[in-house]
Image (cartoon, rainbow, N blue to C red):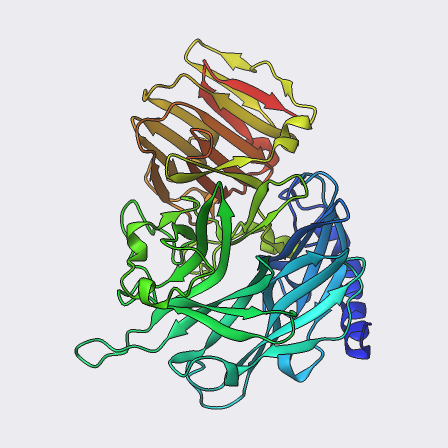
Length: 498
């Protein structure tokens, strides 16, 4: 049941929403088929699930600040993974264990009942480093019979329950049941020092087990000897076509020209052993970089979470953003009182040793129509899309060179394909960042052999590019005025719009 603190905070949210409604609704960057905050800030997807046939997407939400700060789990529902309906928030900070934030977590559906697991965060005032002191991370449980109204909160794990070598950074529980046992994987940061005595913390995960969802004990501590980032966030363990997968977000990877191009990364590794055997010894020798593959090569993707649908599909949704990017690039929707959205849901398919991300099949049920080009000179098709959602499809590329311009030459996004390489660039003719990119510049991705097909989906202020059926994916935000929403695409492509 809602506490008085929750009721008062939700009332604040409603008042802010009403105050900003006109500004937000008139914003030209609002999307049609993506989860957005009605006002304020959104980040990590939480508690993704299908419950009684309805899809639920919870998310980190700050209605009172367009620059974030936590405080809520927002909530949207859908019957088709494409059209989302905003609901009131379901969680806020109302107990001592989550006074600093209701952080990310997951949902478990069992016996027609919803269980939500999340991290309660507390940052104590004072002169602390907030790594080894000053932070309290608590794993909490709340329950629901309808996905909207929550029970009281139960403490599951506290600082006293984590290994001594683990810092105060423990968060983002993902819970599932397997062979009669409940498992919880947590992102963690282990203390470590290099040969010179300098601090060199190592990312990893902790796995706990339970027989009743309430009492948990440590099962495995997976911190590789070879450092791969200093902290792993948003872990997710699942099985896809008989293969065990660990999805995670390692922080602190050195940037490369064609990999780890964002400040923080999101990707997955194929695990060498099953979950039901203790993995500590195996993982000491395991080098995650050998198998780590990035989920997305674009500017705006982080904190993905997956869930299994009632028909057995594994669906993944990410945050179309990255933390701490304000100095690198901006989101121009801030001026209209909101920031960020979630990605389109994608279905995961394991094939040839890697995972393909393709748009959910429900997307094809939308009333797409082929559109005639405004101009066609044999080489390029040009089209103005203003208020429409647009799909650009091209197959038979066979490693050849292709170019797609979204916007104008002096203010747009160019997608260039050649051989096995795809490049997204917001640089204009003077090699300066285009206004519509908010400071974004260049991202590069490759496929294993050669580019054969391309699908580009545009929904107002977000572009998602699927190469070779999702072998490589790019997600980016784009902020074009409606008058500048032009396409210039290869004459052999197919353009569809809604």
